[in-house]
Image 1 (cartoon, rainbow, N blue to C red):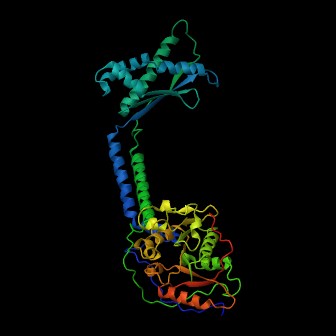
Image 2 (cartoon, rainbow, N blue to C red):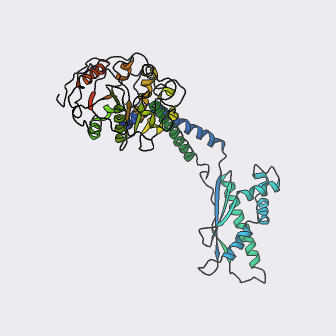
Image 3 (cartoon, rainbow, N blue to C red):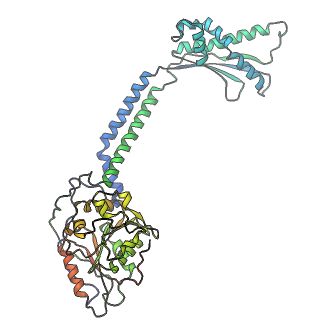
Amino acid sequence: MSDRLPLPLAAPGSLLQPSHPPAPARGEDGRGLWRYLRRGRLAVVASAVAGALLAAGVVNLVPPRYVATARLVLETGSTQLDRGQLASRLQVMGSRDLARQVVREQRLATRLPDAAGSEEAALEAVLAGLNIRPVDGSQMIAINYAAAGPRLAADVANAFADIYLRRQQASLETPASRGDSAGRVRLMSRADPETAPRYPRRSHIILAGGLLGLLAGLAAVLAGWRRRRLEPEAAGWSAGEVPCCDGRRERHLPWIGSPRGQGAGMGDIVRAVEARGDRARLVVVTGIAADEAVGACAVRLARELAGDSRVALVSLDAGHMGLERLTADPRAPGLADLLFGVASFSEVVHREAGSRCHIIPIGRGLRDLDAIVSADRLVLILGTLAQTYDHVVIAAPPLGGVAGTERLAALGPTVVLVTPPDEDGGGATDAVEAFDALAARGFDAIAPVAFAAPLRLPLAA
């Protein structure tokens, strides 16, 4: 028998058709996300506008505050800052006694809305809006006052400066201090009414509200895109009849390895799978019999692919292929539990200790292959996994005689058909029959592989 068998395939089944376009495959995530964002751009814009309007409504509820600044300078006769003199002047300027005089001279008990005619209330309001500080470590002193109106803010700031300067002048005219100008404070600039409130800055707050709304809209769109990728049911996947497509053409994959001798090397199988790119996101490893050769091939293929890719190994083994040893607990939840709604994805996906591969065992309870393969949710689960992982390797017993296999074939997987190599070629007939049975079920990319089970299966997790 030649190394390459031009075995014809049955007409390929179509991919599972969604009721609207499904989420993109991993290799097209960027383009799929961009298309999803374009469809959701109106929602993002609406969210940004809503955020800006909400911010405008909030800013209208906040009373404006105007800040006026009068500046004084401490004359020490030296370029060195006298921190003691500066602190003393700041303490006097911000004293309650000086503030009380400002309240009286400016009649703030009647000018301040919150004072309601009370001098004490006006005094507390003045002290709350007052900020006297040195400017950038220099000898300059800034008297800042914040008020509801620009004129009121300027009047109060100038009143603090004027009253302090008058008190200083009076102290310098005493006989004891006459002629002593050391540490004298002089006026540098008077406060002018502001033309716009210092805070809240209406334009800044509205812009910030719009940006927050934009981010919220983008987050909502991204969350929807992620749900659409991970939950095909929510995105409208149809679990009904798998439609056929026109324009079918026959095709086949070459025989990998020789049916005689030692068979194919795992490197040959890996290269053949990787060469198919996105067409090998789902790889079904099956054989002419449910034996450990199929299980070993599936495990080794998954481990090799997991070196550079994200790979999940899904087991359909009911106990004849040795895959129950993949997990520490043979009764760990798996595919059957997920199919019938008694476990979630996070509960059935197990990390293999010896590689980066993720394992989904067959699970507990029902292990009837016909019931599992014909379950409506199987194609949905495999579709979800194919969108999450770069490769999903499915280890399966012979599928040619299993009812409902057409639904699995409709997903368009690459099939690795494990056949035992033998010297006299007597197994070729079984290989051809298994090939034909798979092709009759709708599988269109079948690669027969001459693969011998190792003496010790690499299944220890």
